Image (tube, rainbow, N blue to C red; front, side, top):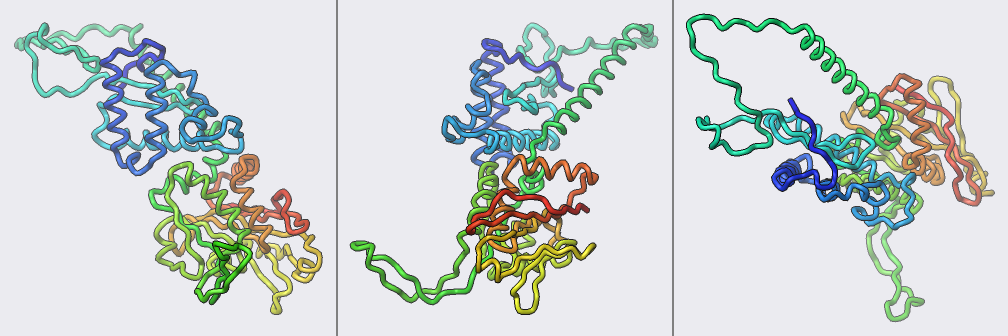
Length: 421
């Protein structure tokens, strides 16, 4: 049970209270929920220290982005959600900490949704290790409720005080108000969850690092290097290399930025050297389609999957439920470089690995770029969240996207079809 929170106004904290809050903060940060991250401790220390010093006016999204994450003063908070994503993850980890056994009687630190100003709550009681017989000798303890009066050991039963109907009604009203407040908080949190929380939450909440399974190209036996003294002079040397398509780097960089902002560890591996053991170790993001065998394997059993004709002059996405096809003609693609490209975007739990898989794969490179942009754009993710709610908030999803390619550059992604299960 908790008593009222400490006032968060300048000068509202005594030195004893500040010391107790700092001690509790260090307990939180030493816990595995926080100790494995570099960003979470920095964020929590910043907002707590500024609150204790009365500088809560500095705890705004833009200011936090500049001071903690080194963002430029004019950065766009709507397209870069690093502060909101970090705060949401900290709220979740604080809740996990206090749900663990042994923390029931500790001072509680909370970060309410929609605010970056921490709240502090004292426990109403704390266990004592010794009994003090002289009340005058008892140390002052802000967290300690006064001892109840001792019950005399009479042989006659102690009479039960009469029930006060007003007191009963008042307590009942308090209980109802607490329930209403808790319900309101849950509803507020649900409605104020960001689109990034909606899509990336299952990945960011995993304790395991994320693997990027990247499409790689055939190995080369030579590499051309430039002369340091004369960069116009080139020399070809024997070397074994594996190439990565540069257009695939765009979605990788965008999505890796979200993971990095949350302090989430990730690794990159070429599809040719990725094993089933790798995929079972944690969530995986698959980049590329026809140049990534793992993407083709994982999507083969899904409603929307990749296909092609025998001579591989046409590549397509097929809807197995309606036989609808979204096709890229290779001849047109090479001749004009102006065509419609398509991509599969999916997030689901793979039945083979038991892990969450995210697929970001276009028929052509432009489709892959468009899919990566979709997954890191808050407006696009908000659109996907609305579709998910309309479908019953199912956890697994698969989307077909289209984009217009003009001179090799993709345009805005558009949802062509969606399926949830």
